[in-house]
Image (cartoon, rainbow, N blue to C red; front, side, top):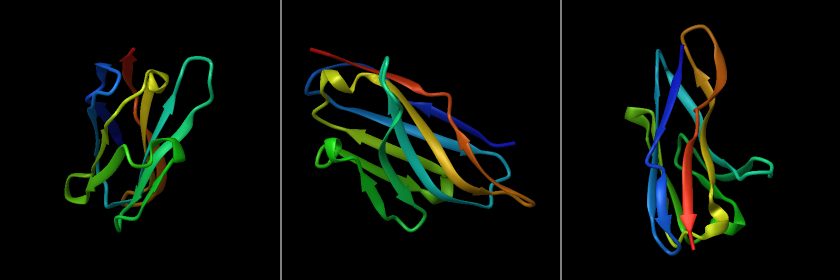
Length: 120
């Protein structure tokens, strides 16, 4: 069984910063990509940033230059440094692990989400 646990969410003023973490645990042999999504009330879930096992990154246009995704493969952990946060970025932030290889199987897994609230 694989678990993803996010942490680091909270309340921050507009213009402030937060650093999210997501740690995957279980009998994991490798993880292809680790991805951050967010979902604001009444809106669809959207991709924020992604990083492959090789370190290639991809960002939503709205966060480029302000957010940085990074990864520690040895710890199966992904981070999201968020700077210059805006009130409209208030959302639940979810971590997803794509292509998690276990001994006999491969699957994708989601974390439970962490709330980020940006006050104006």
